[in-house]
Figure 1 (spheres, rainbow, N blue to C red):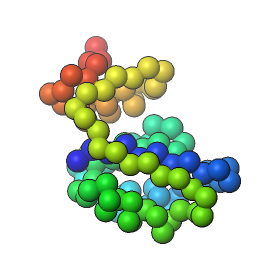
Figure 2: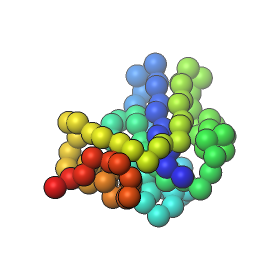
Figure 3: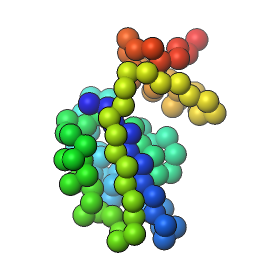
Figure 4: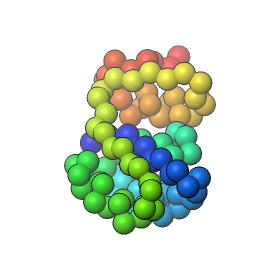
Amino acid sequence: MLFSIILDRPSGNNENAALSSWFASNAVERGVKPVLPAIWFAELPFSAVQIRAGLVPLLGAGDRLLIFKCALEGVTHGFSDGVRKWFADTFVGSHTERIP
């Protein structure tokens, strides 16, 4: 399943190496795509609750985490060609904005 994972770290600590490592060891097929410093799109074989259980031990006390399953539709604006291509490739057969 494809998920969007958003992290808010009020402390300003943008170190995400532990999360990136967790994603790398658990992702399937299309893997994980960081689109902004604390936003990832990830294909993971878990439910949102299971993802949270895996990530919470890696978070700080004031960190906030939002995980949601993505639909098969998406559009982008202002992202690099690589990220836009990843969206189109990931949402194959969807209503995703196509890249020429």
